[in-house]
Image (cartoon, rainbow, N blue to C red; front, top):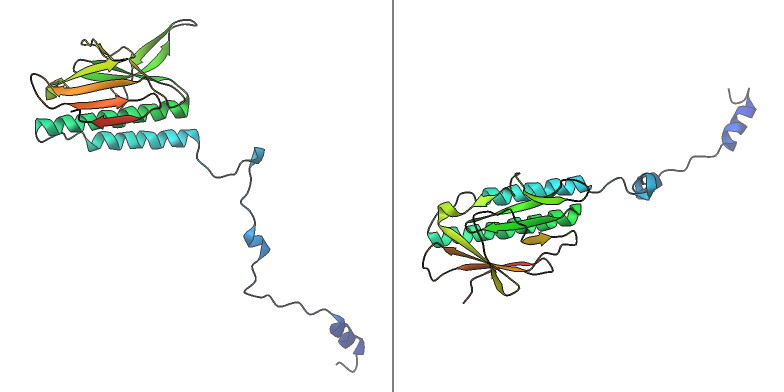
Length: 207
């Protein structure tokens, strides 16, 4: 057949031989950069809503971790103090992420986290948050009472916790305060929560 059609053999000999693929060499198409979406933003990443969901889940876990309060009165007081520190940190972080102001108000036997509500174009009020885990909490059943100090002076507390005494702003800052938790009646031991202007919250046992 090759003798009858010599031009076919010549054409086959002139064809380029395809190069063999080197298995050790990376395919350029497999090393492309991640796809960039509109506006130059990467397609992957966390949205504000996702971060808020994470904060909410974290807050729920904190609440569940200390719901079962048991043991001695001293142990109960420590658990409630740690709970308040964690929840105050959650409110601070929520305000930082959303840019919406939050506040904390105290009564003699409890506390409430507050949010701003606009009554009209000029008037604004504070109302307690009713969603877990930042819902109002009473410590009366545990026999605990609160004492608040700000600017080196005692702040009188009554039965209502709907006044904004500690403010959390969108920069992660808060109104400085000292809050003592103590058993109702004469007792030597108490716990103190200190909040500083830069947003830090410290639990300690004062001398």
